Image (cartoon, rainbow over the protein chains, first blue to last red):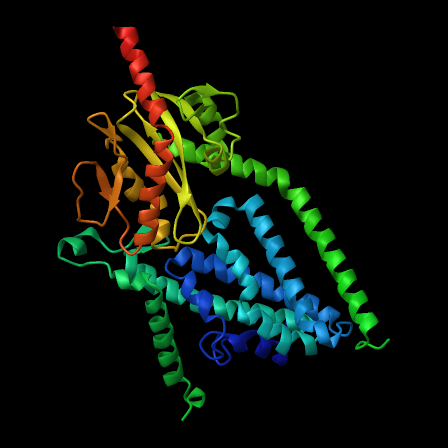
Length: 208
Length: 234
């Protein structure tokens, strides 16, 4: 299926110029919490993508019926229900992954990206665009998580996805894993470095 | 219809809540048996890991039935009492002063597996620890957590943490000492110890306290049996 230019823009925008984490500064909290290892980062990225895409579709379908005064509550209920379903399904079919993510699945509910997209996009656009928007933003968020997770696990534990990648020889030569990489502050610094690189390539995003 | 009227808002909210409740109840009901099976297999895997047997979830039941000879509950006096050790919720059982024991037979030797329950930094910790038939030397251990920090406290599940417990002693000269968790590189006099997790200090302290508190309830079971056997030998 071919996507129109507008759809492409909606889908691909959040990858770079409109990235939820490094441009809009949303969802930083979970970017700190789950990225000390690569695997939870990937699963978290996928889970958020699924939830935000479907929540966007549902809210978009309901957008002409939702009473204005309780629209935030309606959005929360939809998101909470979806997250609960995702968590139940993971428990039944991917028990190990669910154990790893533990509390963080529940915390998807509080991810600012979800509320942000529902409020800013799904309430004013059709279901198909909303689905693409959700997909794009979820993946844009996921990419950043994977990048942070990659560097934190590599330098913090010397492993990737649990497999050792730094050769034993390095350790014999006196190389030591940087324990600071596993701690939350380093996630902030890695995010900052990504933002720095990103902005120096996209001059129009720079603020004076 | 006026979307801003109170009636519409209240009706909308009620209908939505009922619908969501139905959907969630249905999901939960239809997945419950699968989830229960997963949980039970996970528990079997944990118990098996405490006797150094690592197998995938789908083989856990067969292996568990093969290795675990019997399981029972004991009270603080170390006497067997009525109850299902496997189905028992460990934290609850401890609250009622009952303690699950699993007896395994590995390579012709008897191992006693005891349950642990405590608290870490963010939530509950639990685990299983097995001793040789001298009821003192640790044969293996396994730890789990509900929500410790990945890369830090969550490292207690790794074999690199639980492995060193093997060969440590719970009693020193007949006195209950438990096994201490210390900062890597530090040591402690008068009892056996293993290294904690760097950066996971509070979780490590939680494990330390969990082992001490949980095994406390088993002291009579571990010692009384020795005396009985001694008497039989005499």
